[in-house]
Length: 454
Image 1 (cartoon, rainbow, N blue to C red):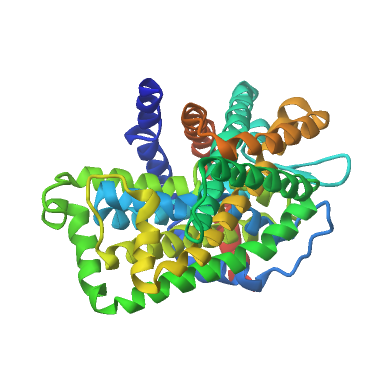
Image 2 (cartoon, rainbow, N blue to C red):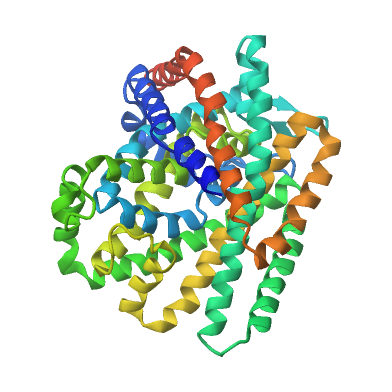
């Protein structure tokens, strides 16, 4: 287990982060800061600029964006951010913002290429993603990278996108029940087992086809996001007098964390690493996952890419930032110690009282479950690329079945392996993006000329 953790730290360490960051900088310069100049267009595209509706086989643009958001907005936006702040200090939030700026253009590039190089299945649905632009846009000797990408993604779907989320759900429900009544270890086991079974049944129903996935995500994600934003904004407003000092901690801590954390975190590089890794891990820009959902949509490459920019903004700049500000305003953080699992709930309890657990835990559960749904779609598309249509049903059966043991037992080794493979997905994807930089720039310039011609 120690060896796996070391490998995981390396995969999600400096080399991968610098590679994704470097790619974001290159794309930003080549597109003349497209993500900033056309940010208003991304708002319009995301919040109603595209009225195309899905037909059951092909998702609508909003359904594809909601599905992508469902996969990224899992428990990491709540628990992961808490861990980043505790281990990286307040300055980690600043570096999370910096990473999101460059992640926006990386996400745009992935989506635009996925839509451009997608293929049409026999039933009329679309199949796309990083594996398809590796296959169709790069020279043939790059083809094995698409296979490697899909193998890593398939395994990661079971761990990062399924088992970790389901286990967090069962723990949250158990915690909520314990707040009302005392339960025995056997009772706790049965509650978690029931959680796994219910999730498996619901997930099996939703994952039956792309239309159900898109419809579910389109309805659930906006409600849960607004609810979580509401309770965190309320907690921050309750501590409004601390807001100026909190922002001061963030900016000072980004470059000189020693004075903010009492010397516990003495290196600015630590805050940079945890902040950037949390940003990348949360919005998944560079991993090549989200384009798989967007490519299933009837939208065009630029409008869907613009929606991807807003997806990163909502996930990282809005939701992750609100989690961090809630924690920092509460001020109950022991720096250098990973207390992520309880930090956010403790901060909210200080404002709303113990009963907030009956709102917080369901929100966590819906975020976790929606993440499972999004990753279920990804995994099915990866397996189809590798083995054909007939492999999709066996994969989904195993994917759903894995939820039951995941709800009851922790399998840290499986999760760490999946997280490693999740990180390794970035290598083939980033390679493709770097080779296709000129094409990405052409897409943005063509869009600019189109607007100027109107």
